[in-house]
Image (cartoon, rainbow, N blue to C red; front, side, top):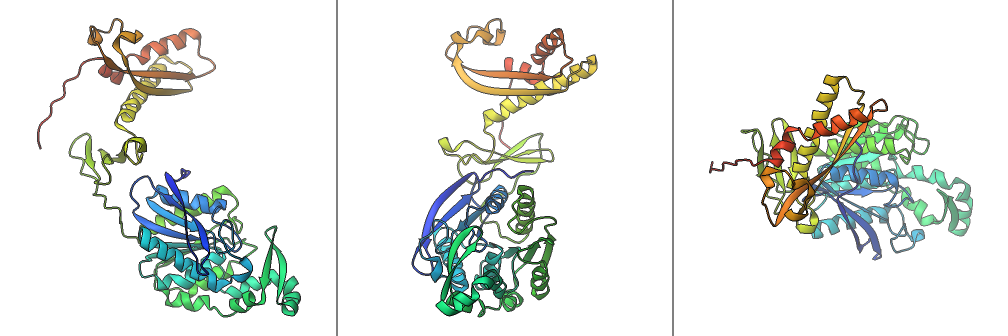
Length: 417
C-alpha cells in the first residue's frame, strides 16, 4: 500500500554543533506518536530528498513522528559547509537528539542514509533511548568518501582546500575534512553498539558497494537483519524502491520500540460492533467489527486528530457500500454488463421545507427545522449497458437495506453494561 503524506508537520529550527540554526521538519502521525524517529540524510543531500519523504510517510502511517534536518551548511540550515566534517555531522545528530528529548521525547529509532548511516552508527550507542537502528546504503568506513575527491586531492594538499562538484553542485572541501574522515572507525562503533540493527543495501549500488553492508552486518551483534534493495540505486530515486524500503523499516521498528502514545488497547469483539476510546484526545476511538480494527475520529477543525473517519463519514460509507453491493447482486442476477459501481456519498443538514426528496416520505412527513440529507452519486461503468439498464439499476439503489433504514424510523435500546 502506498503511504499517504504525513498527517501534519512542523517546520522547526534548533542550534547545531557549531552554533548555527539547523532547519528541520518534524513529520507527525494523525494521533499522538507511538515513538519518535530521527533520520540522517546522505552526504550533501538535504532533508527534503524524495526517499526521506517516502520514509517519513511510511513511518508516520505506522504511528511514528520523524525528525529530519539539514546538516550545517546544507539546504536551509545556516553555517558554512566548508567548515564542517564527519565529526561535526555526528555532533549535529546529537544536537537533534537533544532537541527531541527536550521538546518531545528522545528518538527510539535512528535511520541513516549513506554517510548519514555511518553517522548514525557512530552515535547510536551513545543514545540510551534508541531501541532500533537502520542504515540504507551506508559505508563501513568514512575514508570511503575520499574517493569522491581524488581529482582534487593534489589541489587540496597544496592549497588546503578545493572546490569540487558533487551531485551537480559546487562545494568547498578543506584538508581538515579529509583529515577528520581518517580519524573515525565506524566498524568499531558498530561492534560496541548493542542495538537491534537493520542493514539495507542495494547489490547494484555504484556509489557505496554492497561489500560495505557485509562488513557492517558482520561486525554487528544480534539482533541484526539484512534487507537487499534489489535493483535500487544509491539515492532510491525510484519511488517504488523508496516505498519498499520505508515499509520494511516501519515493520522492523515496530518490533523494538516502546509505545509512548498512551493509547489503550482495542476492546474484545463482544458484540457485532464495539467502540472504545483510545484515551488519546477527546474523540479518537477504536472500532472493532469482528476481526476488523480501525479508528474513528473527528477532523482537526473541531479538535480531533483526523486519524480516522468521523461518525457521519462511517454512516455515509455504510450507505455507499450497501448501494454498491445491492447493485452488483442485481446486475449479476439479471446478467447485466455492469463492469464496476462507484458510489460517492455526501452528508449535510437542510431545512425540511427545502428538501425535495422528502416529498412522499412518510417518516419525514410534517417535519420542520433541520433534517439530515445524504446525496448519493452513482457511477455505472459498462459500455454495453442500455439506458433502460441504467434506469433500473438507479431505481434498485433506493432498495438497498441501509437506504431503507436511513429513510425509516429505527428503535435504539440503550442500557448500562
